[in-house]
Image 1 (cartoon, one colour):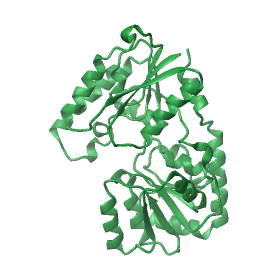
Image 2 (spheres, rainbow, N blue to C red; image 1 turned 60 degrees about the vertical axis):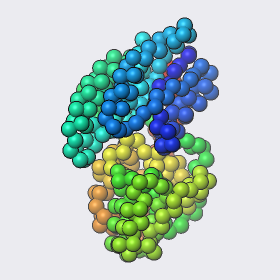
Image 3 (cartoon, helix red, strand yellow; image 1 turned 90 degrees about the horizontal axis):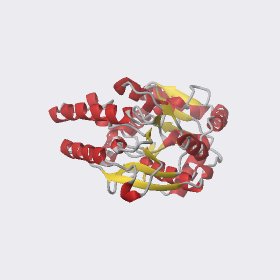
Image 4 (cartoon, rainbow, N blue to C red; image 1 turned 120 degrees about the horizontal axis):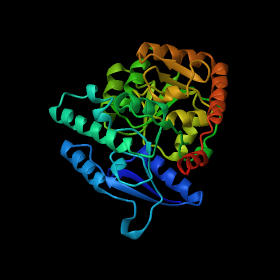
Length: 342
């Protein structure tokens, strides 16, 4: 098949979406399909720029550009699913979160309220006419039902370089690699550190807008001897930190999917997540292959002290986490099979 992947790009802002997009392109090519990538430039603000990009996407007809027939368009991101094609499939990473599940958490804005109406109408119209709808996770599919009344099939994909993750002798630290942002809630782990009694350390890797605030919080709470900020680390360092960790923390708020969960499972490490963490809850079963706790610093501290005192049980849960990953049949081969059905 000749397939066009449609997504967006914000210059110099990179993350999990890039792995997802490139992973799909590579998988389609390896499976013998002709595939190319079209990425529309996107800015989150001002609101007028979002509207302009929506309008532009809605005017693009990719059925036969310049006389070249395209068999299928697979769109991954808002507003790329506005592109017109008679066999248009959408595999939704997430919608424009600022006007959906995050709307009430942001400061009140008349402009965003108007944008919300326009975006919801756009999604209802464009996703409603897609031939097939898939979602990055069950959580993303649930939001689509909640806000748009549309139904999508969850379709999981592996993290990048899934074959490279490994397990090694655990050392007394818990690992959390992610962008340092409010929704990722590294601050919750730092707050928990002040209540911990065990010598377990917390290693946080990554960079982001909330890094200065996290430094300030660590100093203010006096937990610099327990919490270490690693900054940006290499891929090899990330693999090693996963492999030697006691467990992995992922207390983010309402995550769409979350590579961290899958990377930990591939490393045979159990994950500590929260009851409102979204995507990780599709994989983590409390006290079976990880732990699901309330988003409360004292509750997390108690669990962290527990896992330090129960080394053998933690290792067993890590092995169960690896087995859980295998049971899910998470592979690019399965993704390609699902997305190239006739």
